Image (cartoon, rainbow, N blue to C red; front, top):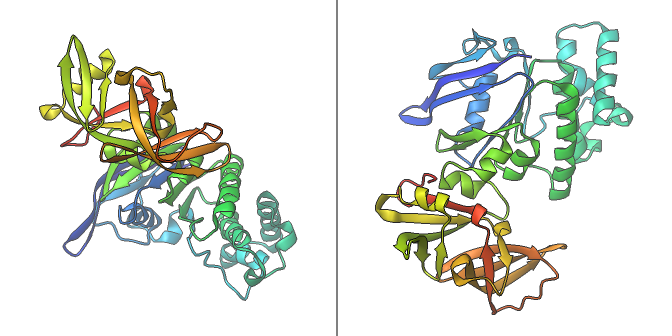
Length: 362
């Protein structure tokens, strides 16, 4: 499998620059997910790799060979689009074999390849149906099957699940994960859905405004975000943010803000003191808040419960802490009444601190 390297990749449309020196290397047999909000440059990056967009500056290397001057058909890749892009007048088998037939491969080879890929994707019983006779999930599997039959070295996915309903997206995520294990190819996947990124990726690349913010395993990005943007983008429900000031009192270091006054561990205190003017943003994930009415005041947040969302085994509470809104995850059997003020202990290991001006993690 090829190794892919993007070197100082820049993209401009006239005077507008949308990618700012992207540096990225994707290893053999790696499932890489480019994730970020709309307009961050992730689809543009994917389309430049595919050859559907020209490179303004920089170079794309595959196994050390520059490819940005090559036509898409010469780059040994296959792409799955958001809108399926199937031929409505062709049945599933013909859609899946279209690229092979263009290459004038032997019919026996084409039939064997189509049957093999159809079995992998659970499409064997649908080979004679046309796209209009299939569900959205089945059509997306056909689009993936058409890419797989090409036996390319690189597979590109441009938000392939965004047109599906929530239940079907969950099923297709599982199928994609299984498929990546079986196929053993380089896969680059673009999505704005951080759940897809967290569940599918070997490595996540978080993008924002044409820059790479952070890259690493899902666990690395979730537990050690490098800035406030990454911390708030990954995780559902999202991380809570509270504005505070670092203060030293009685030999201990506190972060103090509207409605809270928390003591910091020695490690957190040391990093907090590097903040400009000691103004920081406190980040706490909803899962790091535990209902604990007997907690010490300097180790807990007192929250006023405004909304309770029952989601089965868990409830998500929307609360207020001073003027800020805070979300909490807790067991749905915990007795909570709206309008109550409750005390939630903060997991010391779950405290994240960000410089308020630069938004960099401390």
